[in-house]
Image (cartoon, rainbow, N blue to C red):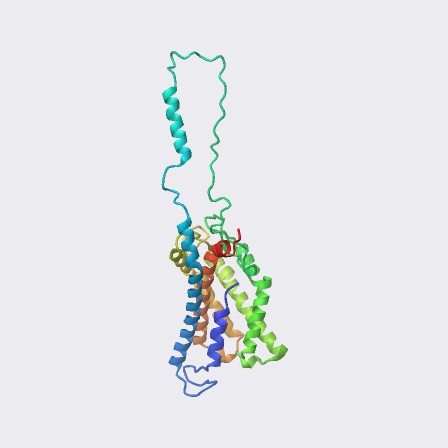
Length: 323
């Protein structure tokens, strides 16, 4: 489920503060408004929302991650004690071994038990980078892959199944209802009116936004470009390294063949979703400018969603004390 809260805020902001198109024919609050000034105000509002979200996430995660890095013991400070014991044992054996010519032969060779040399995987049952199907017990996280996990590429059917799972999950209906109620309370689109009929108009539009976004970015475009729409968690390294990795996944993605490519699924898919929304929102909202604002807001929401996904294992393990 894509994060659409910022998009709804921007749309309501544009509508409630008035909008003039390039000809200056439409104005809901005042006449003679400056289109350049409104564009600057809208973009500044959207960036301010994202900036506060990123700052809050940084303040929550950076002390925890720094503590975890300082508390972790240095695993490469010296040789393994087991190896030292084996080396000292082999030295004593070689020093006390008698001469083969003077040693009497035993009547029977007694078999000695072989040492257990089964390799031990240090990452077994480790919570580092382990994703769950949901974040905070309700938010879908079906497209996230745990760190250091190698999975086969998704088939075309698997991509459509992932998009369907994100679209019809019970949380999607709840989230659409919350957005619809908030939009109607703020009269974001007066053309949709109030009451039960008005709420239903708000509701199906909010649901269509998130469903179309899921299918465009996880099914339609990835099936054509042979890209993997899943998020592959880095799971290790410093805070800034992991945050940079999470942000880069908006423009770089993994292909079905195992390589890397420009993330057309995210860039083009969100653009198609923004263009499609012009078909079912009021005519006053249908403009190239509003479509561009919607597209940028979708990309910003995808960036924030990737950061939350990347640090969700740390939040779950260190802050929520879950294994």
